[in-house]
Amino acid sequence: MSFTNRIEKALSAAIERGQSGPSPSKLASALHYTVTPGGARVRPTILLSVASACGDDNPALADAAAAALELIHCASLVHDDLPCFDDAETRRGKPSVHCAYGEPLAVLTGDSLIVMGFSVLTEAADLDPVRAIALLKVLAARTGMPGGICAGQGWESEDAVDLSAYHRAKTGALFIAATQMGAIAAGQDGEQWEDLGARIGEAFQVADDLRDALYDEETLGKPTGQDDLHGRPNAVTELGVQGAISRMRDILSGAIASIPRCPGEALLARIVSAQAEVLTPIKWRAEQASRIAGE
Image (cartoon, rainbow, N blue to C red):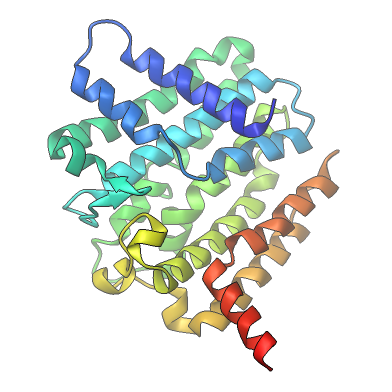
C-alpha cells in the first residue's frame, strides 16, 4: 500500500471514531471538512519515509503516528486562519473553517483535532507501549510550549521576536516531529533524527515564503501577502527570490548530509533531494526556462 493510501486510511478511521455515537452533528461535519480533502500530506509522508528507511517493522504504529501528526497540523491551520490570527477566508481552495462553520465551531474543531491526534496514539499503544509513549512525548513537545507550534504562534504576539526560535517552532516543530516519530515508530532512536527534521522544516519555511511572494490567492488556495500584511519575517524580503531559492537548496543539501545511517539511507536521500524541485515554485521555474530560451 502506498504512503498516501496508508495516511488517508488512518485519517479516515480517526475521523470516523470522532464522529461515532451521539455527537454534535455540525462539529462532526467540521472535523471531516477540515481534514478532507487534504493538502500534500508532506509531514506524514516524511514520517512514513523515515519509518521505511529504518525498516518499518511496525507499520500499523507508523500509520497511527502519521495520522496523529497530520491531525495536529490540520488543527494548527484551523486556529491559524481565525480572525484573531491571520483572518484568512480560504484554505486549500475552499472557505476556511471559521467562514464555513463560524468562529465558535472553528475553535472547537481545532481543539478536537488536537485531542484526536493524541487519542490516535493512545489507542495504538497496545502495538508497542514503549514506542507509543516515546511517540506521545515527541508529539507533545512539538505541539505545545516551549518549542512547539503553539510557541511559534505565540512569538507573533511578542514585541521582540527571536527569529530562529520563531521559525523552528512555527514551521520546524512538526517536521522535527515527523523525522523523530518515523524513526521511533520503527524502533530507532529519535534524537539523532532531529537535525534532519529541522533542516527540512527550514527549507519548507523558505519555500512557503516564496509561494507567498510569487503566487496569487487563486493559485495558492489561500490568502497571499500574509507576511507583509502581518509584519512577519520573510526570506524573500531578506534575500530576494533568487537568493531565497538558493538558500532553500543549500538547506536541503545539508539535510541530505544529516541523514543518520540506516538501511534505507540512499533512498531517503533521493526523496529529500527531490524535494528541492517540488518546493521550488513552478512560476519561477517557468520564468527561468523562458528567460533561458530567449537568450
